[in-house]
Length: 633
Image (cartoon, rainbow, N blue to C red; front, top):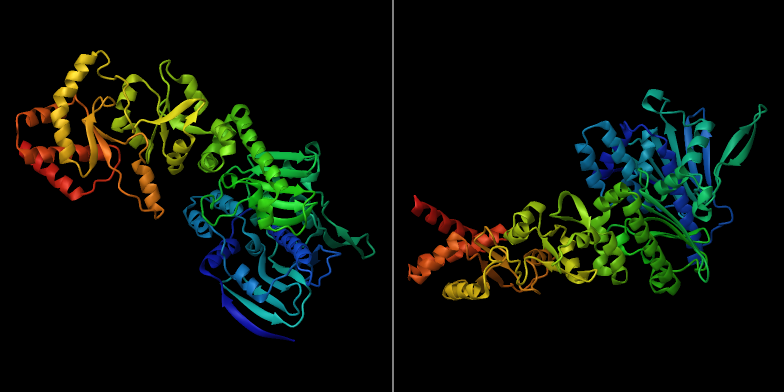
């Protein structure tokens, strides 16, 4: 007996992804079986943990396994597990819709992909899970029953935009996915997936390390006898020594835990012994995931206790700035029903976390010296995230600073480490100079750079939003203060290094009246007007006091919804620029006050624009500038 049959439509993005699978040109269609087995393995993990946590859940966990069944005459392939199963609502939610972050981005990227190879790589990178079945099947049928419940659910679709959901009065516990296979087509890399040899090959290649037995009934001899065989070794890679595991096994395991398709950039296999024993197998990916900077993006590694799966995305084991690290930590002495909240407070877990972080950072530092090309790939993909640790992880601040690379004026193409910068510092240089901004070109063309360029001082070019925060928080490297060239007084003696002290005093006296008048005329915009020692060609620039917040940081906070009181800055004038000397002469001669005030406004506006700032009243600035230009014709 069965009841409640419904025909429903796939969510729009799910429908698009389905179409990609149905009409896929993806050559490696074998992955469909890896994805189904991985789903079954997850379901068995979840049932095991549920049975430990929920004492009222009456389920038999003595023989948890995955079964593959083939009907060559009907050309069907079934992957069955006796795991946690799904309710009707979960079936609709998990299969009828795609809630996974980054799906829309994937679809957009695939539409923009210029060739089939790029499309194939994107499909593989994303990890299409259950939908991969439609690469090899004309129709997919799923029967499932949630552990602890009496009724089941049947789901069926031909991948054409709709699916049928039906309630069942009875069904075996767990989930069975039956694929009605497409005809074999070697040219389209569509193999005979009803063949025992092909199934063995795929299981061995992709799922040999699955912790649960994968069983299949196979023919034995010519008498038509059959026997049930276990196809996988079930050896946990992290429990084996490194010399027992080859690179290909590591790579396949990584693809399983990370749902990635490319090989990892680095493998970290470690073991902790003593009062708290654990094994860890960690991977640094070769590319950043779509959701690396998404607020809801998942992070953390998988936690096992004595090879029993406990949880995905264990945040207690890996700090947020290393959220891209994937892998498994198997702790020997934790309770099986430990909660996320308890993990955060567990002293032993904190010790493991410190060791894992130290090992990851140490591995990256070793990569810098031994494999610079791989390090450059790592930093291009994950450097922005790693720099967050300079703010959030003071205990490892020095270790992170050792692996930081940033752009600088020393080389337009190659980034530099802070250590390399210090080694190149001039003999009389005491500070590490930097400038933050939205782009390299904006920073390089900033008036603040003029004296440093003229004198040959190297300046770090910092364009990531997080740079604004960490340079303030860190403050120094190797005993050398980190100093913004857009803040405070900086005297490099670029233009007047031969001037005597009396000559400098006289020049200051000559400009005093103009500086005092301009400070009054621009009092709503600036808190001081003074002569500059950092300018060589520009007439003026705007700077902050040593402890003022930079305009870029103000924008960052406002973009996050934090209102800040306006910060008045300092206008610096170049005493050798014709515009400034002409303005001083006109002021000393008692020229038209309104015209002089407008000139001061224009001078301040140009200084703001030159550093990439925003004018308070662009229309007024444009009008004043147009009037001045008209008067010159």
